[in-house]
Image 1 (cartoon, rainbow, N blue to C red):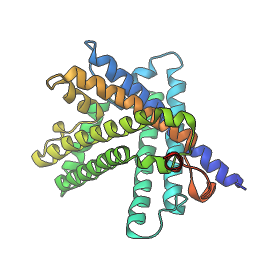
Image 2 (image 1 turned 180 degrees about the vertical axis):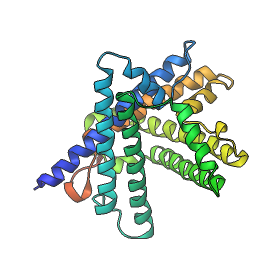
Image 3 (image 1 turned 30 degrees about the vertical axis):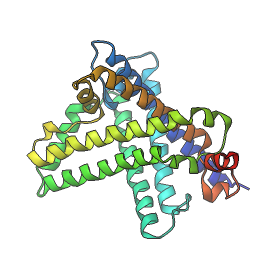
Image 4 (image 1 turned 135 degrees about the vertical axis):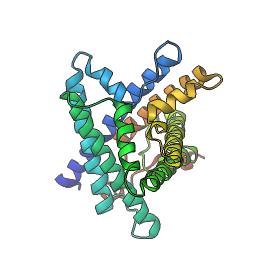
Length: 277
């Protein structure tokens, strides 16, 4: 029987993944629109700034911010308590540490979105460049930014691997709808991972040259695709990929399995697929 605390943790998890889903629907939708219009592709912060001007936009931003803070709680608790049963070996400890770090990052994003909702946040790209420059100005700043770039690249490659090898099927409960949209989940993870690698490369250049202006977030990664040959087509595929990644997050919100809470008997997507082959 699931205790009240376990049930609360699962709903916290659901809120977090749902908030991420909303964000990437916005970013992906704007990127896809930019592929076929004079508009520029937007990063996360710029997309949310546009949302603020919409009817009920401030209320929606606050809901997203609360959702990301919920995601922070979920990831930190999952890492500390090990509800996903990664274990205490070297691989397990790295996975749990990654959960805690990503939780902290999303908590920071949630706070920045809350600041945006109440009108006290600066521009997305300019703010990111300012923070990067502040780090570069520290003793050993280039090394810090380079390390961050390597970590981000590793995260991107992890998402690509997770999608390409269908590793997400091990922690999603079997459902007929999931079987139908499985190619979209795979596509979303691979595209999102590839975009993270592009962001990491820009931070690598910033560290190499010591120039914060060479760093860029998701918006710059999307713009770099648009500037290539057949760039509008690539940007369109990337926009659709981010929407697919949003769908993946919404699937996590609904069908995510937490081993320490749900137990070993829940049929996963992978088990269901193996049973049918």
